[in-house]
Image 1: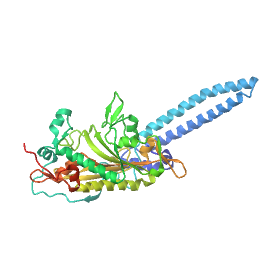
Image 2: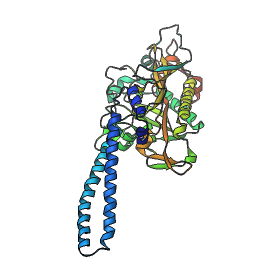
Image 3: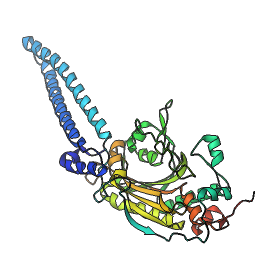
Image 4: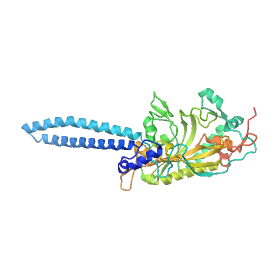
Amino acid sequence: MIDLRTLREDPDRLRASQRARGEDDSVVDRLLGLDERRRSALNGFESLRAEQKSIGKSVSRASGDERQALLDRAKDLAAQVKVAEAEADRLAGELDELLLSVPNIVEEGAPSGGEDDYVVIEEIGEKPSFDFEPRDHVELGELLDAIDIERGAKVSGARFFFLKGVGARLQLGLLNMAMQQAVEAGFTPMITPVLVKPESMQGTGFHVAHDKEIYRLPEDDLYLVGTSEVPLAAYHADEILDSRALPMRYAGWSSCFRREAGSYGKDTRGIIRVHQFDKVEMFSYCRVEDSHEEHRRLLAWEKEMLEKVELPYRIIDTAAGDLGTSAARKFDCEAWIPSQGRYRELTSTSNCTDFQARRLRVRYRDAEGRPQHVATLNGTLATTRWIVAILENHQQADGSVVVPKALRPYVGLDVLEPVSR
């Protein structure tokens, strides 16, 4: 959540952020009003409590009428303290609830607007030129006997699939290469839980009560994660980290689950938008003042992976209205998809500043020994969707697919050949 001290000192910063996101900026005045009322109620409670303690000490030294008067006053104060405490708690609860609904403050320089208002930072690589009619990944997957969508739907329903044979080998090779790169860059590899408590989901920035994209197991009050960012963000919840260890970087491998509730009619063909996929996710804890540079490092590692699989891609600076709740800035890497004639997102990296850390209470001690909230950042290093771009960009006329050179040791093949049926 946002820092109340920052809000008090510079409310116009949040107002500008809300407007950039296309959100209601009147929430700033509601927050300031609630904060003032809560602090006033808390001061009133503390003043009454101090008087109550003082009278409690005086009773033992008094006698006669004075003692009785003090006892009567103590009784009256006890009732007032109880009411004042309840009011302070009520206002604190209202303030916390409102704070949880407010997204992170957008980083200066991020574009304003919605989904289509991104800014292209750079385009990298040459789009393939085919002297034949290129196939899409679904047709290639069938020729290679690599993707079985029909049986995925039979077994589990729409937007599920099987990866088999070279399709399974391609995904395992891709994710293993991503994890190896992360380890070489100093990340600690993690296999994370895919079920988390509501406080872990809420702490990362998801609204469990209202987010229709999240799968929930109501009997257990657990949620299936849509990214290993969630368990990695909550990994150090309620801890004070060793400042000497910062930045702390983890690479999480997990299956991910998304209901895709708002995507009816979108990407119904193939494995671009599905309910279950695998992903290697980078996650970093660092000082807030270092988060801008750390964000660029995560982007550089994403670019390194994309260049290893020899894909043409572009980097976009995501507009404020498309950032999501936790991100202050987000860069997406989008690969060229020949069958669609357009770029599609393969990776994203977000700087969440201290927004998640405040919710999850993750801190470190500064040079003066004072607790400070860390910044958290995340970035995708490889995911199942990459298979779409790899198959389509590296296809040949006969339906075979050339495996990118860097990926070959992990897949065990130079070329994926069509299967005779």
